[in-house]
Image (cartoon, rainbow, N blue to C red; front, side, top):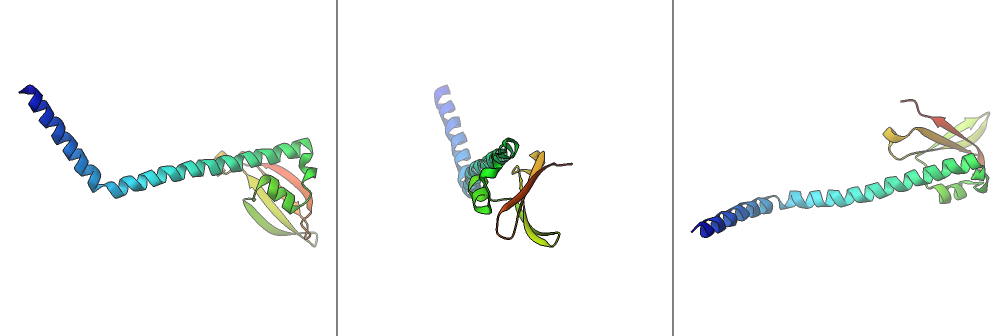
Length: 130
């Protein structure tokens, strides 16, 4: 008899849980999608951070000279976070901003400056004051 009683209890518990799962199947599916999206987001963030670290290393070693124009910089280090058109002593330039993907983790940022023909003019690294 105790075996039958235990079996009945287990069946009822699984039955109740099963109904709950069926009632919330859409929410559970959304959570699964969110989890898969988070994995993709982590890969994206890690890629941006790796390219930023490579840019900083190229600046420190002087290898930045191997990337003389916008096309070469974009191929090596990816898209910048922000592109701003500025005027430097009457000369139009583009200022590209690079930093780690998550602002809260960013300790510094890099600005690259290009002339109207897309040639790299100068670069600077700046500490972020939070």
